[in-house]
Amino acid sequence: MELIPTARIARVEESEEGTFSVMTICNQAFCVTLEPPDFLNKVNVSNIPPGQYLCKKVNSPQFGITFEIINVPDRSHVLFHSGNRIEDTEGCVILAQHFGKLHGDRAVLNSGATFKEFMDIMKDVDVFSLTIKEVY
Image (cartoon, rainbow, N blue to C red; front, side):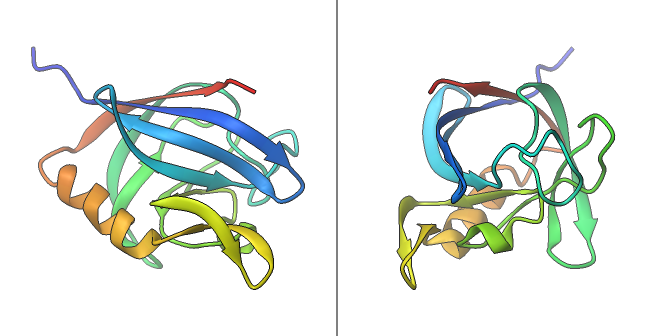
């Protein structure tokens, strides 16, 4: 049986400006992430509850080929995609190169290139496991 790749999101900061994290793939630091703050898993506006998940490659009408976090309780279409600010998340996980500011707001930057690199790394992967943990 072939082992599926693993990813981890370690949350390092949460405020009304978002949930900021560091993501590893197969135990190697890869990027930073941005999700909304915790609004008790409310659809489209909350971060994902900490826990273990499976991620499956999908073709999103809005974002193209990406991965969906498929077993988030009471939610669907929770995706990895590019973006910069909390308004871009819609309850999903934004991948980026580093934390920063955009138009005076907390943000994650160089997201488009980081998301492309993520998809290049995962080009031969259909499913991977994801652990989300709060470390703040």
